[in-house]
Image (cartoon, rainbow, N blue to C red; front, side, top):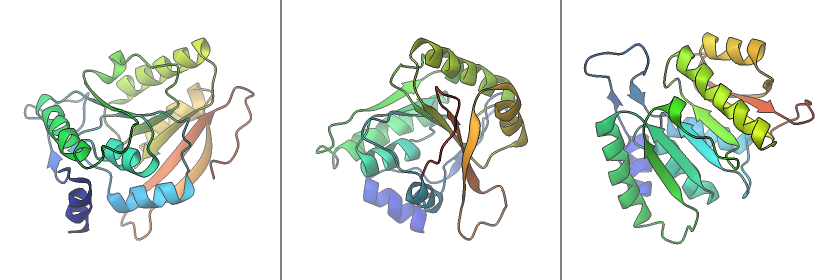
Length: 208
């Protein structure tokens, strides 16, 4: 019930799950990050006015709306499921009706995550197991290419991290784990956030 009340406060509908009708090994089902988990994450991990967040597999938009409302910064959501994307657009209209005072944009884009053109200002990337490791690798390579073109510090946030994502980041990329955030009262040990950072000088620091 708390989830629905939080939705109501943002004037959105993000509760529930959605499986792909014909099944797919590439893209995973829609399931929103619990609000209590987001509350805990952002007690520990602070965003700045200069940050620009991209949520890959944004679903109905819970994470973009939450971050936009809390930090008043630009957020982009990428979603490949057509009906879910349409629901996210509907949520955006409803949310924006009560958040006109926040000048930062919210951008919702329909399409494949691996085809998203990473902007030179994008610096925080959020993933809740939205797709296969093959697609994840391509997305991370796109992020690294963007860093090469526009050097900057970049964070990757994984919620409910799977082994394949962790192993790839740790063994095959310059990203280094800087912080773990556990969710209070979690029923499963995977209910946590891992935050990985790429720093230009190669030295990780705390996200707190």
